[in-house]
Structure formats: structure tokens, C-alpha cells
Length: 150
Image (cartoon, rainbow, N blue to C red; front, top):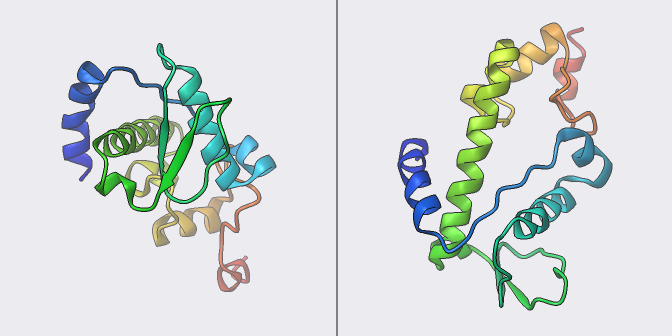
């Protein structure tokens, strides 16, 4: 849960051998697509490490090789490997903190609650006031039936 992740964040940061957190903004996501953006963020996070990993394990089934370091993708890896679970906690917690930050500038979208996922409330705000600088423009923000309400 979000509460559990917030409690785990400082423990992971204190006890991890190394960690890095990187972001890809909505403009770059629009340019390269969400999958490539996720992989790019992973590469950037690895770049931030103060050690060079000997082997990289990644949750899921998609990854691009990183330099000459061997890697493996593991479906549902966050339930199998503590390091993947810890990385997932860091990623989600930092995402949530970012969403809470942009919520302060754009509370109409209720970013702090939806965390970037298109809730009904979020879609209604887009319908009523349009999108903002934090929305991906290549993502279908409203279903066709809501677009017809304009």
C-alpha cells in the first residue's frame, strides 16, 4: 500500500548498497512511447548508481541491454526478488511524491489521488478545463463518448 511504501522508503534508501531514481517527463514519453520511456528511466537510474552492477534483473518482460552488463527480465519479479521489490517501492513512492507536488499546481485533476491513472474525476476535469502541461498529448485523454460532450 502507499502507506507501507512510505514507511519502507527510508529503510530501503539507508540499507541499499546503491540506488538511483530517474524520471522521464511527459514530453519525452510522447516522443518515444511509454515502454521505451520506462526502459530509459531504468537506464538513467542505473547511471546514478555509485557502483557498477555485475548483473541486472528487471521486473517484466522488456528491457534493452545496458552497456555490456548482462541482464534478465523476470515476469512478476517484484514478488520473487527483494531487489526488484525494493526498486518498485522506490519508483512508486517517488512517483507518488511527484504527483502530490504537481497536484499543488493543478488540484483540479486531483493528481494526489489518481497518481496519473485516469479516474472518472480526472477525465471529467480534462473534459471541463482541458489538459495541462503535465498530460501526455499522445495518450487518449478522453474516451470518444466524453469527447462528444464538448
